[in-house]
Length: 151
Image 1 (cartoon, rainbow, N blue to C red):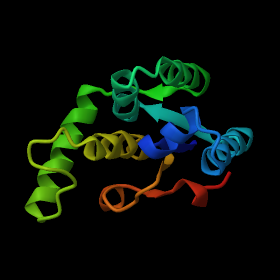
Image 2 (spheres, rainbow, N blue to C red):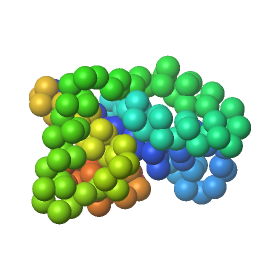
Image 3 (cartoon, helix red, strand yellow):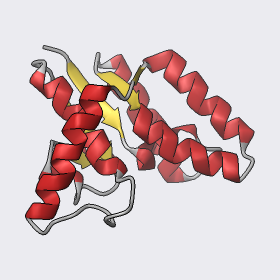
């Protein structure tokens, strides 16, 4: 069993962004500590999409290059048909419970990210999503504030 940490858009933006803020530097150090500790950290395609599209809109090509470099270094999770099928189940179940994670016409990246995590869990791995907001994700899969996740 491998231990995986999947990066949500908040931590991904902090790690790859140009910011020299205390939080961004702490997030970069946190990532290095996970990797040094043998944790398998991945960039999910849906998270890449969420961060990359804004970087492209703002013409911040250095940020795009940083995401590309991180993906090449630590790896990523592709969106598969199986991912989308499970995500659609999550989406429907949450709406049936009256607890949607996004507007009805939104793509709803949270359910896609949760499906990516759930498939790894189903394969017998330990998985947690590192995020800045656990509210929506913890309805479906393990997630925690990135600072709380340690190697």
